[in-house]
Image (cartoon, rainbow, N blue to C red; front, side, top):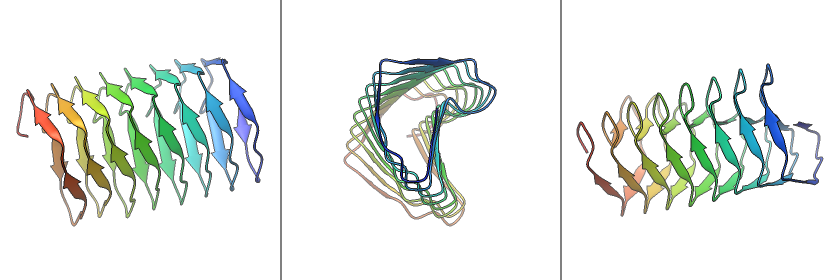
Length: 184
């Protein structure tokens, strides 16, 4: 699905799989509603929001994509709630290049890299998520990343629950970080 140039629409109960590029692209102020879709086994990103793309993503199952399950960049600002983002061959959620977004009440687990990556002046809200069983860290903020990380349950990750590096400046509060195989 390629939704662009202020397009909207409601997309429900679709199976989107085994595509060469992203399963869903949302850009240029497009603002779709996507519910209960199954996005999996893509050779790129599961859902890619960029160039000021918006969208409301609810109860989607996003897994086994070669790159991130959900990528946000270049001013995109999606709202992602009650989704399951898991078993990505790299990370779960990747927010970069001034990306925004609200990620609320999601299950983010079993990804090969970090559950959530935030970098390059991005500023998402990561709230009330379960971030667990990552093969690396839970939340990784680097390269001047920002963001509000609050009320998450972050546990059972192979590296740090939250790692903050290289001139990053997030707000981290009211999280439960436990049972990791490395630092909290």
